[in-house]
Image (cartoon, rainbow over all chains, first blue to last red; front, top):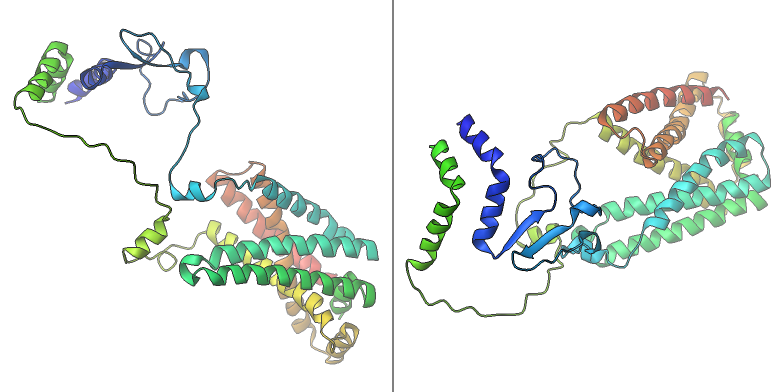
Length: 190
Length: 173
């Protein structure tokens, strides 16, 4: 059994050529790799990598055409990819991370050096970070498949309203009240 | 048996003869009709299964709690707790009858025992400390670091430890 497996494995390139020859008039080979070492599943070769020896030879034996795979664009007909068409989330994602990193510095600084300016900065960055977080929670849990089509949209609108109201309230606290970090320190001094 | 198959397939002439025999042995009229391809379905996996009324496999009720998932949901819950704190401060200051200095004085006048005060402060400070430290861990992941399961567990335990120390320090402020 092991011997037969060994025989099949060693002759695999020949079988691959044979199977394609039987069912089509074309040979499907990779140039410079048929006679090379046999690559199995832990190979690190990327079949789509653009390099001089990976042109896919999709040619009938009587024609001599080669297709350069680096020019081929992948497409998908699955619904998740269809619905994402035309929407690029990457810049928003980067903005979220940069804001989180900024908040790591602003929060301690606002407490170490209490002032209206740092209070305002803290309020704005906090509300943005908070809004993105609550939006993620709402989008994750209030899904159309459970709640229908209207309620998720309403929930997202409520999130926006909530963030705006929170920012207005914090500004009121900073400029008309006792200040943001001062209020927190009031309660912490108890 | 396997040896026989190996030798059989290695013989090129035999293979092509065998398959050619398959094609020509019995004659049948076959008609092929070309039709336009059906449009791709925009139904997601969940929608399709709901439409077919298939039962859903259990998930949260059977999944073993692990450090990875527990720390992740704690990150989300501490975030919601911090949102709650700021809601009190932000939306509270918009309501007419809320005056924070007066409220602080009233709580101070309750003269709560030190143990109650310290444990209360610890419970309020822990979400802030944990979310801060785990936030750093998340940002490190976003740079591509510590993504192996071993590193996730190591940084997870470190996060828990530092969060508890941070909480203890915040309580003393």
